[in-house]
Image 1: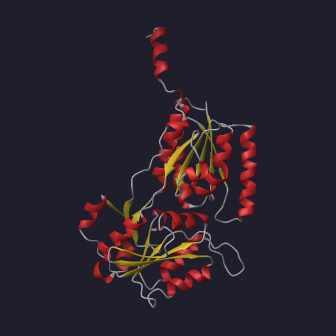
Image 2: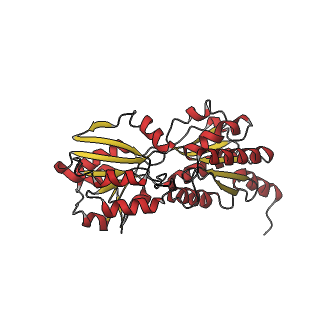
Image 3: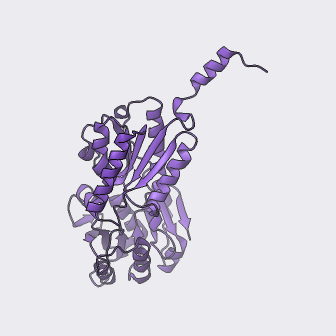
Length: 331
């Protein structure tokens, strides 16, 4: 059966321009490295959502494992290449990439979509006339309040450990308001920013002696050894789980599992990538970036390791699911 040309034309007009395969090029610049689990999660989500709709060029600044001078030089090279051959959209993931490249790209009228940003993006971008994106809001304080429910009256003091990366500094300033000690609910909380793996080990091993009842691991990806070499994050997390005298909880899904953290109200990279891809498609369909309000994906998911719950003799209260939705389990 032949379709009348006028009908065919109408059908074609109903197909959004942004879904035509191969018509657009999107460059994704990650703050971290390809093997980082957070990066893998949002990259996979971006790739799946944009498959057949745009060609992706994915790059990495590797700011967790390189020096500021090294990744600033790489950012400069990326910027020069993007100016010489502008893509339709640039997706910048996490604070470092946004801080280094966001404003220069916008000044050259290249649309920007960010994801995983902990800081107020306007601090990096100013007026976001050429940008929109996805905010990352791990529920640091809410997670601690739920820990009261999980551990009950035995939880009186909790230690939170972060590395001393730029992202950790942003979280310390913006979420904890620069306070290393505070009271949340009935729990005294102490936050420490750590430079080296040796210091990290000391804080973990001495935690019970110093009066803590549980440990939250935040970021641990920039720790160095005695010679200043980067220590792999899997090594840090595995050692912490194996040697901690106290149960270890986490803020991100990649830190939960057998030989890792017990669990927590966690954030995931996948929803960040999906939301960023949708914003990029909106821009390709003709919306002005500055007219699209930044979004925040679903606020956290309860995720726990069955093995670690058993190891620490922790039984989750029946009320927990009612507080935060379905509880997911891993090994």
